[in-house]
Length: 418
Image (cartoon, rainbow, N blue to C red; front, side, top):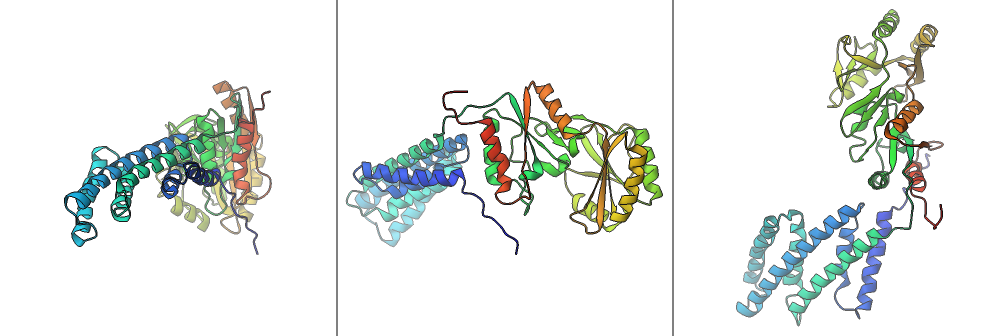
């Protein structure tokens, strides 16, 4: 039976618990005044991954509370003092009618996301606490309780241990070390922590054997500032500009010689080439089930462009991929390394997805992740670099290790000395 491990408890969970306790502590300090339930609801809403999100949610909660409290107060005056219809069918019809101006007011204030909270505050006043001995006091306490929760949320989210930030170092990690083996995605913890450190000035990049098309969705929620090393160090890709910063190219004459050898083996090759800033994937005739499966599963992606022809002379070939039976790949690899071993970087490895199949990938001899890391340092004026890695197989805990290591390396605890 395969052993699995549970993901660690994240900072947001711990902060939520701390915020709830703080609201309870304030309740006791007030001599058990107010209703801590409402403070706790507010603090849970305000605890967010990023400080700017906390302030945004606090503003929404404040607007929602004021709108709901205002119309709740109006409804109290009407149903108790002007037209005493509380706890009658007519009274509930009036409450339902008042929901319209509550929601519409949030629309006018451009606070649509606060509509739900406005309704919650309004209904808590008009349905649950209308018959209190002093409903007006409840309205006041309801607003105060919400402010206590908002304040507690902002305070808890703002508390950080004293740390210094290392901004003269490039931190580089292998993307696959960070991906869940279940869904090939970053964990929420990794995304939150990396985004926070990037906003605080961390120089961080990722390296992968994948193409930009394969990582665009994976990194869609990560605000990468430096270019990413793609295709085993054959190219640098800027996620913000959707453009290639630089690439190591395989010459047309070399590609033609490789193509001749591959055709003698009655095999197809996927030629990945740049046409401007677009990566085109050229192929001939699909020869086996693995090729057909790869093509079928990826051709619909908006980030991949498959073309059934040879590359144009103006295209810049970055790398070539061949997939076939392990036996045929072994023979082809032997001939290719004999012919181009000193001119190109040629890799082969078995397929995890297609049993009995293997890959060959061919790059410019200068392509490499370390060279690209050094290029980033030189281009962006970064003095040194550190590579972060995970030893062993990926698990629910190990895939968060890169984010943990980045945090320890980028912002070590500051104890008053360097």
